[in-house]
Every structure is written in C-alpha cells, then in structure tokens.
Image 1 (tube, rainbow, N blue to C red):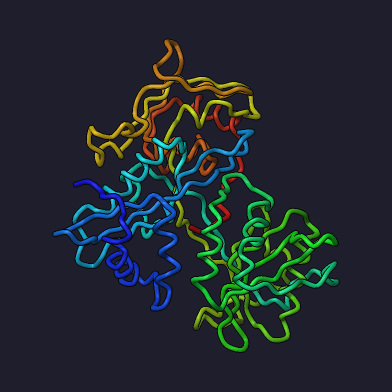
Image 2 (cartoon, rainbow, N blue to C red):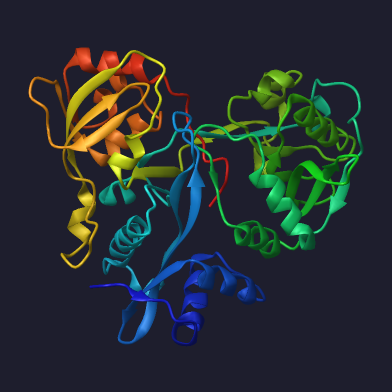
Length: 411
C-alpha cells in the first residue's frame, strides 16, 4: 500500500467528508480547509478509487535551546481516516510516508498531536511533556493596576499582522512556528473568535491574545493563545482578562512555558473546591500529554549543539520502528544504525561506533525524549526501553541540563 498525492479535482469532496466524519469540519467551512489541503504535503489512501484517508504535513521551524539556528520541522497536521476505511493500515503508512518525504526536503525533526497514547509510537514518536490548561476566575487575578494601553479588538481579517506578531513571540525551548495559513485557518474556522491586540506608538502590534469562544453570558471563555515578549506585556494581557471578571465567571488558557499561573491567583484551592464540575465550569488545572516528537536526522539534530555541562561521548545503537512502514523505494527509512555521539560546546554525531566508548541502546522514540529535554537520561529506564551504563546516564544528566520543551502552538 502506498499513499497517493492529493489531487484537488479527484479527492477534495471525499476528503471533506473524511473531516466531517472526524468531527473536524462543519457545513460552510469547506473553502477554508481547501487552502490547508493545497498548501501542505498531502497524501491520500484510496479504496476502490475513493479517497478514504488523508494525511497532511507542513514545514515549520523548531527552536532547540542548544542550537543557534532554528531547525527545519515537519508538522504532521492531519491524519484522518473515513469510517469505512478504518483498520486497513492507512494511518500508520501515510504518517510514515509523510515523514520520509519531509526528511527528503531537509526537515530534521517532526511533531504531531496524538488521538491516543501508543499509536504513533509505532512510527518512532515519543511523548512531549505534559501540557497544562488552567481554568480560573478572572476576578481572582492578583495583579493590580491597568494595562499600559487599552487593547484594540481585531477581527479575523487581521490574521496577517496577528500571525507576524505570533511568530515574533518569546520563543521557549521546543517551540515551533508554522506557516501563515495556520493562523488564518485557525481563526476562520472559528467565526466567533476575536483578538485583543496591544499596539506601539508607531502603530505596530506588540502583543495580543485570541479569544476562541465565550459560552453564554458568563462564560466559560477560552483563550486560544497569548503572545508576549516581556513581563510587562504578559501583565497587560492578564489585566485585560481580569477586567472581564464582573461578567465572565471562568477563563481557560494554556499555561505558558515557565510561568505558573496558579501563583498569580487568589485562593485557587478554595475556588477549586467550591466550583461546579458541570459543563466545564470547574476551577483548576487539567494536565495531559497529547503531543509527540521524533528525530528524522540524528546527525543534523546533534551537530552544532552547545551543551552547558562537561563533554560526554558514547556509542549509540539506535532502532527505528518506522522502517516497518516504508518499502525500499524510499530514500529515507528512519534513523536506525550505529553512531558515535559527542555532546560538548560543539556537539557532533557520526555514523559508526568508536572503540572504548560506553554504549547506549534505545529506540529513536527514547533518544528523542532525551535530546529534546522531555526526560532526563537517568529517568529513562523507568519509562522507556533503554540499555546504558548507569554512570553514562548520570553523566548525561549533568551534560544536557535541558528545560522541558513546549510546542507553544496547537497543530
């Protein structure tokens, strides 16, 4: 079974049906997703000449704190299978083929959002850290004062300046930027969304947040994303949200990387106990891992890393399950093989082992979690399949010292 390149004339109607079956699309939104299908690398799976599966990826950039330049990123943005095409192997095969095509384009790391734990592990993905969605009463924000400037309400037609500002945000370790079409699509698919933007004296957008929904007169209100570069800008956003407290009872927001919103709230424990759990109206923090990551090119992901600890060298024997989904016609069939990895102020990885160095044996799923900071080396044996001397793992803990990564962008 091989994926077939998406053709608008042949496949669009079937692909729209697939998305509607998945609950991703409502009537009247067909034109919006047409651009999404056309702009990415899209493959379909056919059964009796009918498209019953659609897989799409887009090229972005990945921010690794140990690299001075952003890494080319393969964002797997859609894997969907029609109800009458399930359990035929389309999802795994098409995902693997998207990765192979991305690697051929020079993309060195890939990511996706998973529908359930375990499935995408079969093509080499490992979990990203937990994400936290904070539900709080805006009236209980402890920060006092007023925004330096009142925000302006922007419409979905302002998506271009919103996207530009989004890409210029404070980038955390592991964050990604995606093409402009993503911001446009996210906003156009939700006609009820609006943006509160703050502008400089010169008239440029400096920071903003997007309200994706407000349910009823008193909420809940959902903040899709918030963009800022300084503590003062973050304070502006919180003060603006706090001003809704006389009307809106509950707000939810993805907690920004490195910031603990709970510490900025009055009596969050008491509010959690007192609030109702019906219709998503309970104050608190929901935590889960629903995104994954994998290395596509280990050499390029390692070369040029500048790590803070003392140098550490070892042999790596890597397995990659994606090769089970790709036939010999593909140039890229995963990262499996033997490597010499040297982490230092000028890290390198090269094919082949070096005599005398300690040996680590693991899958690309596991090594990706070490490389991106999701797990420390010494804790990997508790959750992943890995063989390595204890002394090597402890040494890597001191060598890498990476913060937890966050994509900071839903896709």
